[in-house]
Structure formats: structure tokens, C-alpha cells
Length: 286
Image (tube, rainbow, N blue to C red):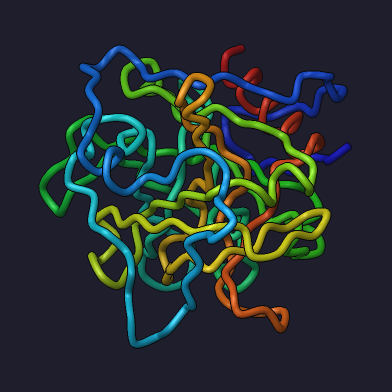
């Protein structure tokens, strides 16, 4: 069972005993709903075909697509982050709603030793679309959590964090579901990833790319999906067109090419991570 580390904010996350539930349903929220063109033409759904849609990560080619319909699901459930710390200027990041007021992100977005430890403040903007378009407002938070193994050991397999908001904006914009899949099952799925990179877009334009699973370990998913700085914390999700066609997160993006693998990666949502995130959501609900 994962332990949670909490900054001295007003909301603390208690780790609950693991549950048997391996699927958490999301919500589309109360805001107007429609099928976006971006979801129609870019999101990959279902399991991979034998031919796949593989592509190499080439620094000379950026395969990402800008998302303009950020007031529609699932794009409005994805948040731009402006992260302030005791050292240096603010930096961009990405998060995604997992409940009414709980935003999941990478652990290094909320706690990084090179930036003095815990972030001092994070501005969270769901569905941001450029500098001036903040369709659901902007929220400030000083209440953060991460796994204890990330805080104490900077273990990349546990680079998972949480931002708790004082406003339940997820009731309006919705939130992602989660699904725990074993390696054999997960390897069959197409993956989607969207977020707010620094380049291009300066951390205020949402960019999307998709591809198939490249490699799996017990704690990580590797994928040849284009990302740059600022994408950290973004949702890695699947959509099952044969079921409810809803987005289910299976990983949290955190790292660029490394570990001798020509692929980006993020911590998998395994049963322990699932239970920890659920405990964060439950704690925020009181």
C-alpha cells in the first residue's frame, strides 16, 4: 500500500485500505456536452490493431495537435498548471481532475528538491485555451500531496502528486475515470495524452498526441507519444468504444525519453495507485 506525504496545507489525505474496485467511473460534469471534432478525429479508441499506429519520437517532427474545443469533454477536465516555488520563476505543468476538487499530476509538480521542496502555490486552470481564454476560471491552491516514496526518495516509479482545490469545479467540467489493467491487457490498448507544454504554446495551449503502448514494467508505461516540458502530470487514457466510450486514465505522464528506451513514460495506475488516488478524492469530499 502506498503512503501519502502531505504539505502543511488545509487538506490532508489519509491512505485508506486497498479496495477491490479496479474501475472508477468519471463524470462529464454539468456543463454543456457535445462530441468535439478533436475527439472525433484524433482520439484513438479501443484496442490496437495488428498493424498499430507506431511512430518514432523524432526531435525534428512534432506530431501533436492543438486542442481548440477545450470547453468540451474530455479536454475541459485537463488543467494547465502554473507552479510557484521558493526558487526561480513559475513553471508550467499539467493536471487532470479525478473528482470534484481533486487534480492529479506528477509528484515533481508539487514537490521537487531542486525547487526547495513543496510548491508554494499552484494556479489551476481547467480547459485553458491561450493566455486570455480561461472558460471555467482559475483556482489557486496551497494544498498538495504526493507519494511518500516520491518525497523521500524521488523514485520515478512513484512520481505521483495531487492538488486539492477549495472549489468543486469538477461538478461542472467533469472528471476522468480510472482503470487498472494487467500488463497483457494494457499492452493491447491505444493510449491518448494531452497537456500544456511549454513549447509550443507557453504552457497555455493544450496539445494532444496518441500512440500504442511501447513497453511496460510493473510500475511504468512507455509510449512513443510526443511531449515536452510542461506535459508532466498529464492524463494517459484509454477509451473503450465498445463499452461507455468514456475516458479512463491508466497512467500519469512524467518523463521524457530515458532508461535506455526511445519512449516517454509515466507511472502506471496499478491497484495501489488507484486506492491512493481514491483516498485523496474521498478526503477532499470530507
